[in-house]
Amino acid sequence: MARILIVGAGLVGAALAERLAGAGQEVIVVAEGPGPATEASFGWINASTTRDPAYFALRAAGMAAWARRAQDLGAAAPRWCGALSLDVPGDAAPLLALGYEVARLEEAEVAAREPALFPRGPALCFATEGYLETGPAARALLDRAVARGAKVLLGQRVLSVLAGDGAAVGVETEAGLLLADHTVLAAGTGAPDLLAPLGLRLPLRPRPGDLLVTAPAPAMLRHVLVTPEREIRQDASGRFLVPSSPPAAPEGRITGLARAFDMDEIAGASLAVLRKHLPVKDLGYERILRAARPVPRDGFPVIGATGIAGLSLSVMHSGATLAAVAAELLADELTTGTGHDLLAPYRLARFQA
Image (spheres, rainbow, N blue to C red):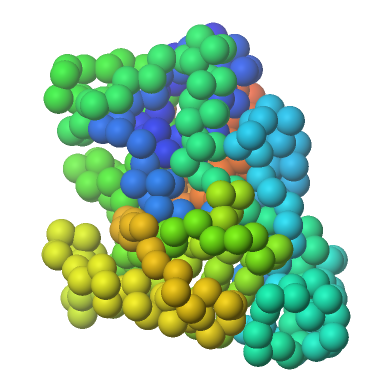
């Protein structure tokens, strides 16, 4: 039995902790707190947003992995409501060629599926897609990990990775040293700073994200809705969730997170999109969540070995789609030493030239 240390308590780290603890490993999760990107995630689970064959295969595997975990997650399980795309109502052939379930709906069919929607027109329907309430799912996975013997240490900022003689042996936190046989950085946007002193590069795109959460409204939206301006979904409480991306600084740094921002202005733009498509004229908002999205520079995840013995990575966007399959495959790699073809394109080595 190996002692495996996971840095990060968001959805990605929680899924990995639960998987490893279930496999009988000694698991410690350490983080300052719940992952900020997890708490502010729109949570759409899909494989329709890419035409890259390898990445499509990984995302499709991610959907299947969540389906396998549904019974374990109880009330936090994914909701497979399907998605309607008004944004790309054209050719479905590329996705059909990849084996994805997609159908073009004409105006009358869209009206039958979404009676409250306007203006109506053709849409692409992705019947197998859904969404995950990522915060509750992460907490449910951590609870399952703890029930299987994992330790979760929150409120501890990780200062550095401990490495010597070409191998990682744990981390230094504000509370002291934590030693381990293997360390996995699932720390989102915090991972690059932990890697840099080791001579490793993980370039991330500057992608802050806002998530508008409205007041409750009567149930009226059945699918995840993809419009030309925003995605929209309605949760079980009746609240609408609408994500957006504020502009990044020209030099590519995510400065918006530290800068005060006008919530009414952000809310106004998102509510305008909501009101364009649904009868919610007087609906107000409750809050806006903002977090930095951990998007590697080429848009693809970074999962697995780093080139330093005893140190792996699991950093990606979107964790809502990929966290379960990343946990399955990386846990298997850590326990068996055998690499998986699905992860082969997504190693850190591609950024080390």
